[in-house]
Length: 171
Image 1 (cartoon, helix red, strand yellow):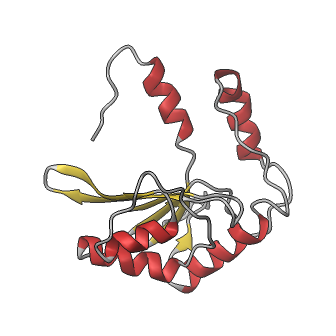
Image 2 (cartoon, rainbow, N blue to C red):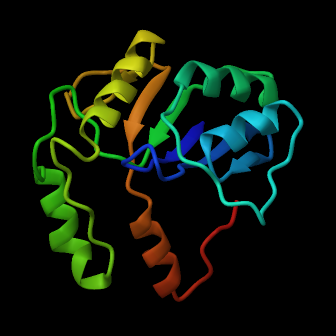
């Protein structure tokens, strides 16, 4: 699985995590603070934590090729922390409102999407995924196949782990 904490602009970097299932559970195979740094990891170049990561537009084909290089397998799922839809997003969605209602009081509200942010970046990303066979999975009530593109909102997990009475798993 390729996880992306996507910036909603091209001038801010997007964090990348590549995890892979194994017989002993999920393993983190790569972490990077930007698309460029992730591509460098696949070329054997480690990123320097003292250097500020650069923002850029995601090139999904390159990210998938780098992922295959790092794991020896094709990515089955691309999970993105960014509003995605099969139609243009111009304002807050019902899902955004539900998250704000439930988790906003706990400090885990969502940003309000607009036609400008993430707008074209999200639309291009979804279209690129689709052209490479990663269709956006939505709540259609019908079975959906892999490879897949999914929208995620992981911040509530961090809140849950910070308030748990027992330790949250790290693997």
